[in-house]
Length: 355
Image 1 (tube, rainbow, N blue to C red):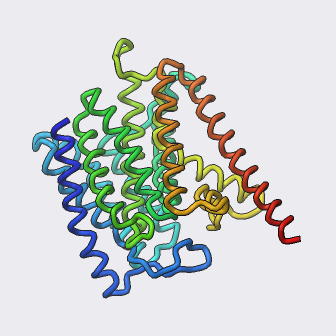
Image 2 (image 1 turned 180 degrees about the vertical axis):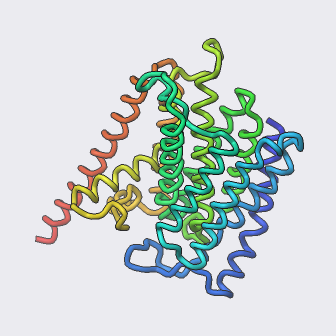
């Protein structure tokens, strides 16, 4: 654990020193996010904070991962570099969604072909038979892209993406450390340390945003960790102290809030006969703010919800995949329905007051 703490502190210091430089340079060069109709923030804000996060993560990882292990992880770093440069380009000059998607597919393809990171079966959810290779590739590409973009979509509030990212990374990192996956534990703690430093400047009222640069890199790393978690947990011996009986459900629960938010807005937009790709204010954080919560209170509430789901799968760690999946999905749907009913109730009450 000493190395993990050192990695987190190293990433924190590097990120903490770089963020003020980025803020000053961004304001000087007008590299800022302008308030608009769909934006919650009210002032011009620098939007390249993800550069500091990535630098802190990358340097700390190289320092604290043993040199003999670099050959094993170099393809993960290459894929993250691809996503990083796509994010930087998009923050500077917005890319067409199709170009961003192609870039993400390229990064995922590198992970699959060079690192052999992929989902190999349904891990007890729909049977345990190994998937045909090309179906495995397709499902893996879809999964990583969904997780990456889900985290990008949740980045719409001061401190929210950073808080959820830290919670998820520490959950994955702690588990990887306990089962001897030291490289991935260092990755997780390095990224968490870099985000903590960034969060100092991103908490309400925010001085800087992470932008697509930070959100996509964090989302991609979490996607990689989720798939690696599923594979490693599934292969652990039955008597292992830290093995979950389910593999997919715990990995999903570690990143549940961004995933639920993405599913929720797609369903709502289709219900309203809108394109699921059309941006609007139907995200979970928008809904909570309509209930009167501030940026910080909304962030803390969603962070608590994330911790609740992680605690839930830890408590239910001996329940099999199908049943744990049903419990997680059922709980998420229930909370989403309750939220929508509260919003509707508040809307009706407001209408009555105006009459």
